[in-house]
Image 1 (cartoon, one colour):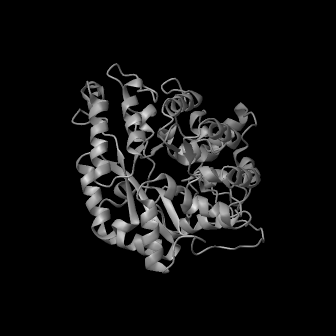
Image 2 (cartoon, one colour):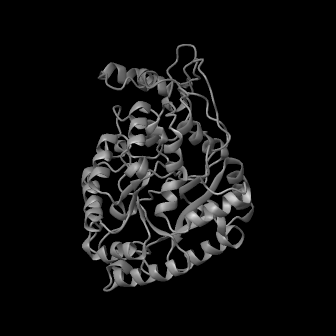
Image 3 (tube, one colour):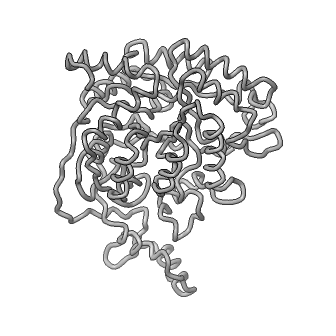
Length: 426
């Protein structure tokens, strides 16, 4: 099974501003046919010993392209959120690995940025959940909500799906019971990772389908327990296309070809979305949160149709302001229209530099700024633009919808406001 985890440790340097996508295509010459002579010339250049650094007429490797924008435009960076924020998409177990000092430092950063509560999505049922509860809640129970993960493998062997717990009789019922116990202990939801549909396999080697009816009792139990399910299905559109000169995220995929889901080995993106939507439709009493703008931030019109069709679906923008910010007019209209269905998420914990980019994106109309502190930026060689959301939309995005949908958030928000300002949440 391929490793499809891309939660790498973030860099801390600030990314140099990049120019518009047109410049990228000038470097790629993406859609131009390559002649045999041109191929020979490129090969000779690559093997001549001359550095491909773009200097003195030499060619430039795309991976070394570091343009610095010459635009002179207004800049209104934000040092904190305008209202208390609830980050519903974070990974404190997988990114911090139990380091207490790192946790202390991040909570201090939360205070500086007016992040009232973070939802850690890393509580795999069993020992990991107990360990994670102790890590986050020993000192900071008022600042963290935890979602459980389903332990599909159990005591099975990694590369032998036939031994996995999820293929044993009664698995769904046992999982539902375990979730009920977790809720009694204060757990507030369930997170489904993308390996469900793109990685976990049946005993015959086929991929487990997202809408496999064997697991319906789990989704039903979540509705009965009053906890939401945040589900990551599929991935960016470019990850399902060939890694060639027409792929807009070629540079990223050239560094991480294992992130590609192109080919017959995997179901199509539309097939994955349809399976997820069938689960949402079958369980109207269970609230689902589509992680990463339901993983279709490239087509907000389609996401809007899903939101219209499924009243038990909400979305959050973790690691997708890179997509939303290159379509600021469409994104702003979309977020205002569906303000009651939006939650705030980052996919962190991230460095403070990146967290503050979220405030700038949502709260200003700044033009052409970097969406990440990384060099090169991780999800496409382009800049983003702010959407300048109205205050009533910001409140719903930052905390009101989370307080309504996620158990434990409302009380933590009240405690945060009482401690930090002595006022009730407005």
